[in-house]
Image (cartoon, rainbow, N blue to C red; front, side, top):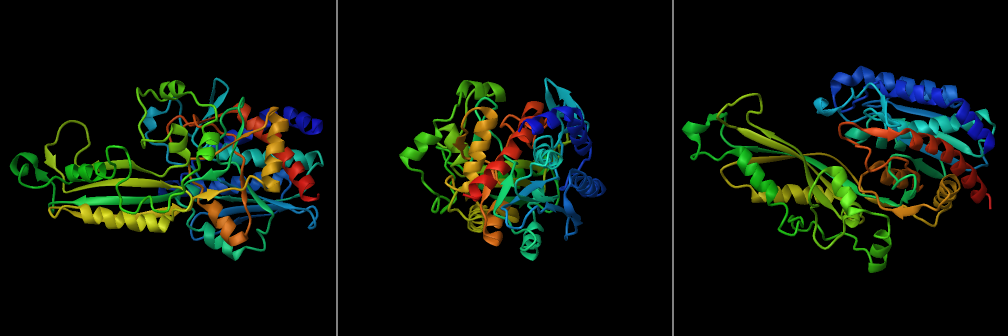
Length: 457
């Protein structure tokens, strides 16, 4: 362990500079204008994997963006860890809210500000650097495989076929992912579950063209108004979702499980202060921790229609649209929820407008076992690195491919993230604490060591 710490300290500045190079590449998978940059990023990841000591490094083509693969098989009889991450990032908009340019990493208060700093470039790059540490100090105790994709932020459409076609190449004993958060460096935690996702776009159409609001207002339904009414009706006064059948399959936690979940440190006043809100909002009957980790939700991610430029234009818009995401919990099916939403939204639309619902992507909720060798290895690694045992938590986000790995490869996943909920993921001024970056690099080799040791018992 001392060898690893010495090597990490001697190469600390280089580890940061290489991450900065990665963050400067605007690998926005959702916007085709960034296509060349996404491809350059895949090449950069492959280059750094090779430099770290990986064999058989390949930029694997798919119908979309490539998947970067690399491996180090020290002994086929030893256990194998498959490391998953993604090199694509969310769009940086709105640009005017960034304090510094999103693709020019800037350090303020010992934090790295850049799009992808935490989600997921900074976090998967910890694994590349930890692998380099183990290679350079001759301490790699097990086999390791890397699969870093470029389409996670747009639904991982081509990952499923890649996994199905490469089952032998991806054969492993566990998947290790750092694309989640922990409570803090002072209170480390391990996520034991993730919510699923159903993502759709809705469009409401009224007249066949934009109309003068003075001439036609009051006589023709305004699609923007109707859309707002439809969306508002999707929650009742208690903030329960009103789609018939939505809660039918929801897993209800026992009082004991709820008690354990709510034992995690949480300061509501600090939570509100950080977000600059006077009051919190959510499903009645549940705590904030339960609402954000164990209960399903429905949120509007974007809404538009009519004139939104400078100045005034008195128009009654022909169309109005919104993007909607639903986070799902264990036992809910993304396909079923998507169908329930479509059926309900179409049924409540008044006759004076037409509605169209377009499903985009989704994923299934997952719960990871806490009694597995891999989870125990992660617990021991964090306890040694942080000096205290991690608290098990439930993550509110979604990583759809976790269920895919279990289905296609027959292996479970360990979610060992080092980000923070306050890292502004998907928002302006995304950040990653330098301390968390290096703590991850320090902890990951310990996971491999304990996983190898516990697997051989």
